[in-house]
Length: 208
Image (cartoon, rainbow, N blue to C red; front, side, top):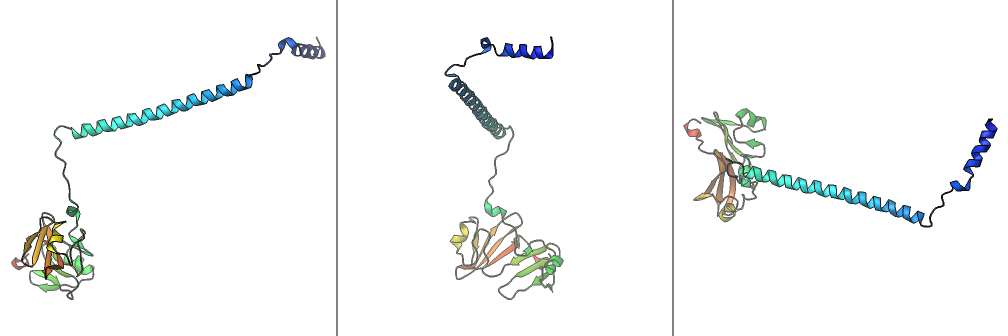
């Protein structure tokens, strides 16, 4: 059979009406509906997986929290008051700084025997520096307030709100802020005039 004869035979076969498959009248709506159902099925399945993952994570976190809280031998939880985080410092000065560090901050020091002293102008810093322990006392400038928002102009009652352990003696009040330092508040006519930061127990007079 020649090529021309083969082509004619194939055309005859494909043009046979018996090969036609008539489409149903509702073929297009059925196809579109099926596609929509498959899309909804995939969306629901994906949402179920997300919910399962979230719930599983919450359950796992709760279990971890329970295990940590009930861990045998775990000590009690310690609550730290914000005041315990206040630093023993003000401006450029900090307790424990060496004399050289204080001079490096622009303060002049005068030899006063066991200690070195920077005497301010009455409204600025006064600094006491021990040869052994470094800065042991800082009288802050006037109008100073502590990080808790009290200080210059505050009354004893106002000081007690952030510092309930305040001890008042005459025209002075003290409160320990740690194992080795505390605030000293000097009063004039019932109001704080100066705030000092001091090392507890320092004594330049005894050769500190």
